[in-house]
Image 1: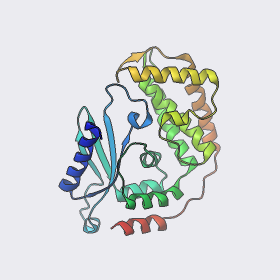
Image 2: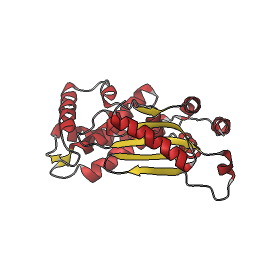
Image 3: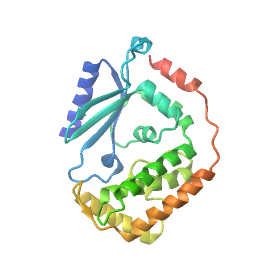
Length: 252
């Protein structure tokens, strides 16, 4: 176990004792989980926790998020199980990503059972729309300048490739970027993305460079296509609340 992972595990144990909660699941999210961290990338740790049963019966219900450690190296925060189950019901793409992270700091049998239930709530249209929204927001806010952050390129590229994966496979996309690259892509685009990936791993987080025309054009065109395609999708019929209610009660 690396020094940083040991520190993360200790922090999770400390917050569990201090806040009086049980951590069910904890993972790395962001660029380290995606596979294109910069030399100075921080650690984005996300976790799901459950409180004592009595806490869920209080009129003054505690906050449903915990922000534990925010410094230049560690960003640790988590969601209450009840909040997570509400978000699974909405097919929250971020939560499905956490559930499939390749870097796991803690896992439990309780969480494994919960996620098996949650898979039934995944929606191709809802997830596609959420990923499209991330890519479109990044495009408008960060990729219109004479020089751009290559990090932000991936904040548009990755969700757009995730849209393609979801629509093709009808399931949550892989977290690691290299697995998204197994999709069928034109060779000229693949080469440009691989060049971008190599550059990103060498650059500091806030460093900027001139745009890459091939990448720029792909993002612009894919955003237009995805918007039309997602709008035309039919809504899927998803389960009601019963299975999630049972999962919640089984943990308390």
